[in-house]
Length: 247
Image 1: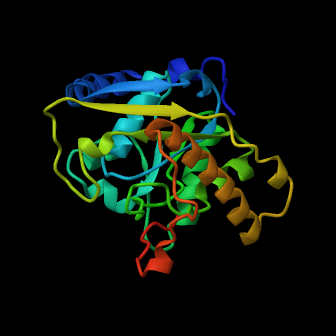
Image 2: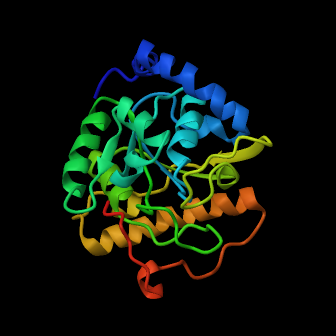
């Protein structure tokens, strides 16, 4: 990997700072951001960040949160998000990684792996798409975040956020700037993947480890919302819903 001690300074290049100067004022106009336990985000070195996902604006707001904590955000995001107004052009301009609907998982994992090898942060939405859960709780997860953390032996950091749906509702492409909203985020401790490290990566192993990640994300979101999530995790296939996220 690259020199972890100097990597964060090199991450924030002039191009990134210019983009931040253009985008962040709009984000601050739309909302106030409160970040809990931000010190748990690694200040240097590679890691995988796994947030919850319930609106198409999430990549921009999550990216801002990571930037504010001193790192440069790089995403694996559903390819269709790259076509969303405002969000899509930003993702393309900053070298983010689209996950194609069919057959793109392996290529996306390899591309993200190169970022990991350079000691950079990679953000993966483990749900693979916007949650289908009616009340926006995390649904069943996919294996991309866990597979990357296991294959490249890097920390997997859970994160939850809440309030972005007031700026852009789920499935909407319209942004509401006024009145100013409040967005809260919380960073968790690295998920303990010890039970699954050093073992052959099978489908069963990935399912188990991914559920452990979803449990942590849900627990963090419960803290933000002050509510208890449903006991049974939402499974889109069990409700006749089509899942488009492949990673």
